[in-house]
Length: 442
Image (tube, rainbow, N blue to C red; front, side):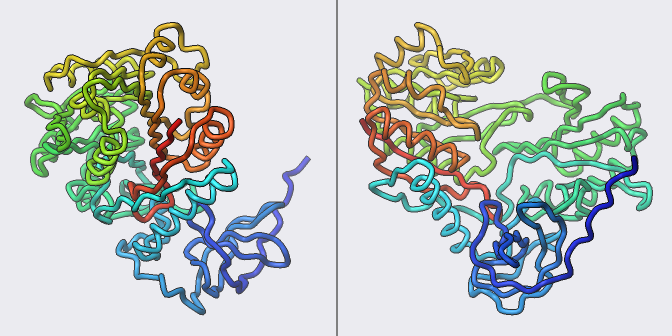
């Protein structure tokens, strides 16, 4: 039986953009069918070209702006529109914030059936060169005779042909071309699938994932390039535990937290916040809202390296920090020791499990404040145990407004909390990612 012949895409069309999707694409309708149009903004009339078609909706790309939005700006990156890393560079900074705030509030209202009593002023910072963590794809393309390094193209599994990336930390973003030439000169250029970027206050690191062993000449080239650009080079032959430093010398990546005069050290493969300016503001707001004092006991879930834990411990009488990854807990404990903090209890637990055991229930019964900083999947499994505990104030840091809204609905409608405050933090400018904070009180 032969392959089903793919139906040809419709001819280019003209449409009026009604709104923006959560991914930052313009939304219009053609004969009642929804079309998501990349590069288009609400209120605009655009000519668009179809890229994909499905039964329920179509995907397209704007090819001519017939009537432009007053919020439209000229993208700063020469690769915008091809690279899929950013979706909103054509939208003004103020309009991006309004879009993200509206996404948060709409999710809370429609999914969680809740509304915040007060809306936080948005936390904002630099729009360019802010990104300290990234995973870049690498591919040697025979037809082009060179290596590509960067993010994937829109509508494609292929890597974008990038020479610069203005949102990455400049040490890497301004040197992508040189980095690509470096990889192209290695003996295993076709066996390097990705490079991970990690930056602290003290240094920048690149982790080279390689599927075959490097020869000595490869190692020398990587070391020399790193020394030229002031970048620490690491190798990763298998999983994250295989990351080893290649550059000579010692030392760890680190960053400073102003609140509490805290220094955090970390491995280049560890999770850290991508935007240092927003991170400082976020920690400051968390401390302001929880306002822990000597008699307070704070329980923190998804505690990681101690980004919130250690500043909280400077003020609170006691902090219980719970994290699912053993390596992160070990490094958080070391960070506490290095900062002279002895009032933190660290624990490893599967935070997707409903039953966390008697130890966690005892900590929750004894605490009066909780901080949550979960992954995109949210913290639904933890909410009953938290609600049964003694916490009268709960601060929720979210990277997904949909799961925050779901959990907010549970906290308010089933567990007796009020949503006191909520607002966005522009952790990822020029993207549709919505980071937010919500304060609940019982």
